[in-house]
Every structure is written in C-alpha cells, then in structure tokens.
Length: 390
Image (cartoon, rainbow, N blue to C red; front, side):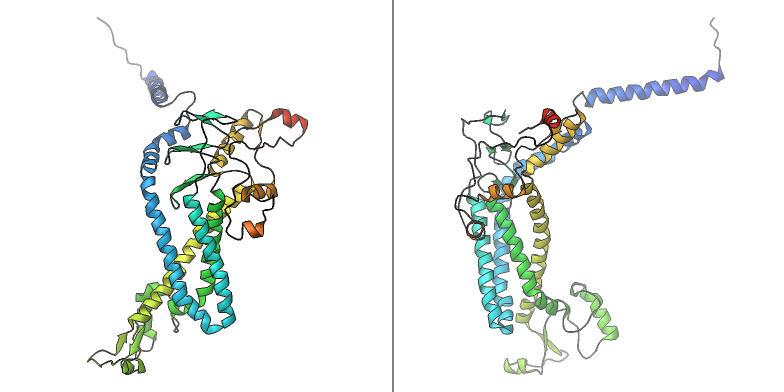
C-alpha cells in the first residue's frame, strides 16, 4: 500500500510553478490563434475594424448623391438669405459698400460654383492597360499600376495620383481634379468668412437683441427668468421673437384688433427674418471651422509634395527604414514653391492671376503616369544609405 506524504513546505513552490505553466500555456494559445511573425497590434486593430470599412465601402456610393444635394441646398440657402437679408442691410449703410459687396461677392460665388462643378464632373484619371512605368500590380484590378496611383474601393477603379474619395463631391480626388477640389475649399472658406464678417453686426442685433441679457439667445428660458426678476415687467419677453404692441402704428395700419388678455402680437415676417439671420451666421461659422482644418491639412500636404494616402505611406516607411539604418526620401518633394507651381499647373503662359484667381479649365502638368524624381540631396554617405519608394 502506497504512502501519501504531505509536504506543506513544497505547496507554495508547486502552486507558483503550476500558475506560471498555466500563464505560459495561455500566452502560447493566444499567439497561436491570433498572431504570426508578421502580425502586430495595428494589424489586429485593422482586422477588428474591417466591418466598419466594409460598410463605408458599400454604402458611400449611395451617400454621395445625398451629400451633393445637401451641399447645393445649403449653399443656395446661404446665397438667398444674403440677397434678402444682408445685402439690403449693407445698402442702408453705404452705396459704395454695396457696389464692393456685389463685385467681391459675385466673384467668390462664381469661383465656388465653377470649381465645385468641375470637381464633381471631372474624371480624376485612370491608368490605361499599357503604361510607361509600373511600380506594382493592383490586387483588385489585376492590372499594372503607375507611380502614385491607388485603387478606390468605392469607385472600384485605380485612380491616378489619388488623394481620397470625397462623398461631398461624389467623386475621387485625383490627378485631374485635385486642383478644382482644393480651390473649391479655398473659395468656400473665403465665402463663408466673408458672409460672417458682413453679417456679424446684424447677427448680434438679432441674437442678443437691444436689451442686455446674461445668457445667449438660445437659452431663452434663463433669460426669461432673468427678465421676470430684474427686467421691465411692462414689456413681456418672447425669447427673440419679434413682437408688436396692439396699439402701435403697425397694427393700426394692418387692421389689428385688440383681444382681451393679449398685449402683443407676433410679427411672423420679422420672426422669419430673425431666424434667417441667425441661421446664416451659425451655419457659416460651423463651415469656417470645418473647412479651415481641411484647408490647413491640404496646404501642408501640397507643400511637402504628398497626397493624403502618401502621408501615411511615407510615415510608415520612415519608421520602418529607420530601424534598418536607412533614410527614406520623398522623391516627389521638389521644394515649396515648385510643389505649388506644379499643383496649380502654372508655367508656359499660365499665371496665378489668370488661371487660379479666375475660373480656368487648364490641365495639370504631366500625364499622371510618370513623375520626375528628386534624388537625395544629403552627403555622399547618406545617398548610399537612402531609399526612395513609390
């Protein structure tokens, strides 16, 4: 008969050993099921977000027309309100200011409409079957891909010098329409700033009113309570809605009749005017903030000779090659002024005044299939260790 000996002193050591073995087994199981030599946490994160990417790819093509209609409707509403509300207000101040606003405002409007239409209906460019230079094979199209071209999963085509797919224009931003898209953003940003500056006085008058209140007009219940406590009780507060006394000249001219218990009548025409002025300023202010961030991002990319996609590719290559002791050089960064000249397609009789500040349909420099490369400008030892991709 076997004897069972209990050794209390060995129990903690054996427990720790078993726990370590269990943890090691769980780590090995996790790495076996989810990892390999080429996998990282970023790859796992991208894999987890794959359903979101699939949803965007499948439904963005349907959102595009909706966003286009939204852009047209919002822009039209801003223009109509400017003509009805802001321009007559400027005309009451000065005739010379009115002439300036008519010239400057219509110049902005023409450029906005022209560049938006061209960005929407201009083909960004697609590589042909035979190209002079091939850098890779598109896995989706199974066709040769020229430098700086990328496949758009929404359009299901390869796009020359692709920047991104924009749902607001329902089109890809690529080689042939990148200039139109950027100029539309610039002129739209200028137009919204112009509307805000022109209507800021009128907005303050309608938003805050003639009487001081400690809270913004949107918090009219608080202002109503403030008015009840400290205001003139002979003048009821209606939260920004224009009201006219019954015995005023307005009611006399319009046949207003006094009703028992009612001291004021709401002027619906002034109410709509008030709503339009506030709507105009708030909408344009929001667009200014959004477009300012977008324009700053594109200015940085164009100044460095990159596209939206190449920003992330270059960052990844810089980090990867740095670990190998190599230096990555962007071969399409020709310098600040040269980058902008190429982007706007200037030169050969094309000027900034004629072809950028005014509508122009000139094509960009080159064919979008080949791009001159800039060699590494560092010392000799850096040239031997440099690497240029794309």
